[in-house]
Length: 182
Image (tube, rainbow, N blue to C red; front, side, top):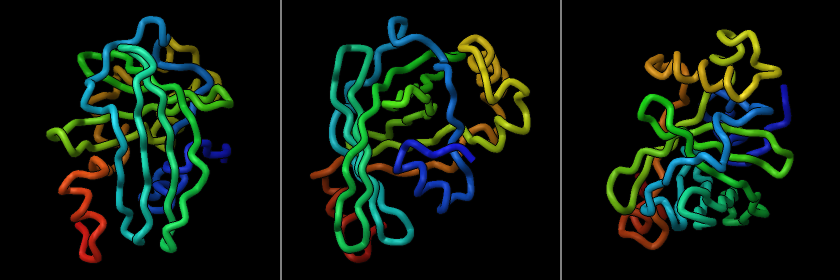
């Protein structure tokens, strides 16, 4: 299996038994990116079932691109070195799908569904589904992967289970950090 670049997604692989699909091609160019919702900008936290956390930080690079940092926090509260990604959204059938470009120029695709000012749900494109249903999965073009995602948007297996992120410093975050958590 390919090396998983995003540390958050490596954790998710274990927790959800689904790996994120990584592509050599984006869904669309950052030059033609869609505007993202400004509410995404900020620091976010996701609590895993095993008591570890994922921290995700979005900061504006422009009106259409984000600087994204991902870090894991283990049970002893030790934070991993954050990894950087350039992130932008591509509109596919009125759905914003984000391209997260690693320093190795691999792309992982995800949706971020805002649920108010202090919460959003993240789902990523599932590697197993792509490999089983897309013959060009190892060497896609931007056009071919875009068409595949568009064709399968309504298929519940295209995306992973939803992960809930809460804004760091919010009342939801304080609840998440408590021993009882969510």
